[in-house]
Length: 57
Image 1 (cartoon, rainbow, N blue to C red):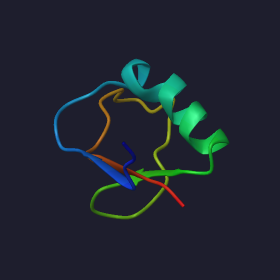
Image 2 (image 1 turned 30 degrees about the horizontal axis):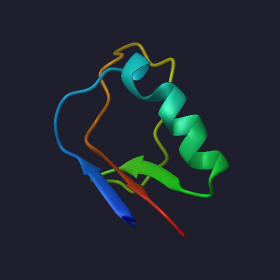
Image 3 (image 1 turned 180 degrees about the vertical axis):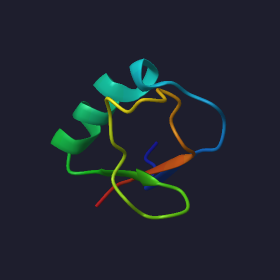
């Protein structure tokens, strides 16, 4: 099957998502903060990710 959106509304750490984020971006998807719509960032002081959404084209 296919999906156009994947919401992640549970705790993750940067190391849980970094590789998948790179693959998703290479595939043309967006990985963004659930509340702000900003792209997920890495190497923050707090390594806990916010809730996020991955969306396809």
